[in-house]
Image (cartoon, rainbow, N blue to C red; front, side, top):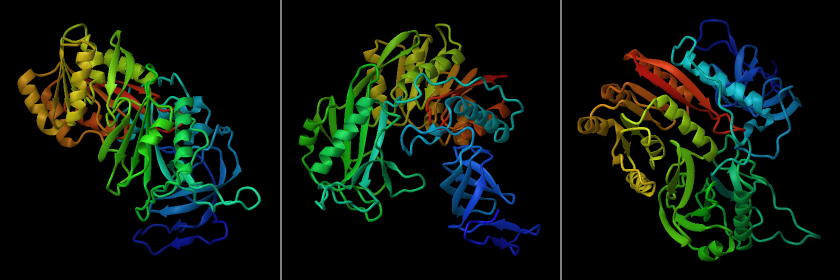
Length: 483
């Protein structure tokens, strides 16, 4: 395929000794037909056999795309013009960098996610016909997130005078939204957050209006200047509580006045000194209300109430978290007895959901703050057969087995990177009859499952769960039973 306005570069003299490969240079624009979707959500096209991953494209689209990165085997590009929409494309509800799949009908999203789980297990895990069940669809397709992290920045467009040449309002170019796809420095404003509830979206608008009226500066991620960095909003979907936490660089502003001007049950102010894009760490002051919110979840045959501190992990889709915990409970196969280990237990959500079906539950988590929350949550729910300990799974699991004995069921809910080889060895040593693996990344679940199967386990079931509609992210639960 010939690039628009630029000739392709032919790399006949590369170390490859076969046929010359035609690879477009960065900046070149190509007309491409999108064939399929890659894991992660980008469209897949081919230019004379050379693979191009196109951000913002879906199968059937005919697009003009600009090459941004070029590798030996593939290139990465983004859509600059939609020439012809494919039959799968639908109109998006609103511009939103965090909802790239809203241009696909929901049924196709589900099909694609289930396919990608199966293909990851086949390609990366070496499983022939893996036992992947039909994906569980989301309860809510829109407005489902109970936590949103927004970023402050400045509009990249020139400021436009108001009426009759009047100067723009103070701080009028301040934006509060999300990183533009493929950019670490540019922030795209959003007029409507389709993944948050109306209450959360209104709170975002209130904060932006107040900060603009104050003439406050957004953080510049290139030269590390400016005050406002992030706004983190949490919502208790069942309790109705809403919390706002504003993250800034070191400095001062009328933080308490902001807290009083917005409709939130609690407000906090975090000052972060580093240059990294993170909402964790820093010095935090409570401006109003409580430092935590509470949420309720139906799990284990009862309603559990959890206290969630500002930096604690909690599944961002409350309604689907209930279904996820139900899947975990079914795969655990408990009948009122048995010993359960919950690794990477966080604030104890899965452990406490299983406690009513188990004889004893032991939770292990590296964060001492999360362990304190888990202990408090057990007391809050009057659960006395769950114990929680702080420690790194790599080094603490052996000690836990020595103290408690081998588990009947071992639940593991690792971060996206999955389990390291050392943790896999520790899990195998624990000698659980069942392993329930909760994964937010099938491409790391697959090799971990293969390692466990090679050590004597059998992959019996994989259940995809759509926790994140309108996005390519996939959650799934796998059951491995000792052969």
